[in-house]
Length: 129
Image (cartoon, rainbow, N blue to C red):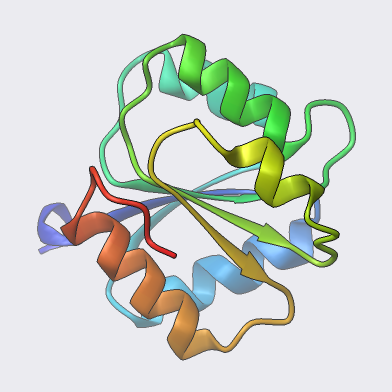
């Protein structure tokens, strides 16, 4: 039953990445909603959402850290997993203080992604590092 599957909100500016992640997550029995930007996600988040968020850290316009700041100001309570292709430590430092956040470096193992998302959903108040 679709309503029983955990929801993952995927935010990435790259359509191929969104499509690939949606396919992978659906195979692992997640329900998936995709967004092409942080702004598109914020419009949906204003209506209230369930599940967890999987967002890219580096996107044009509003990047992942700016998205985290906006969500924090909204008292957004869903767990967030951030993906990055390059972590020089600045992203990790910038994410500090924005609630339950996990960071995955690309390319990441699919099993690690699934385990991180399941952990985030099972323990929404705890970081999934």
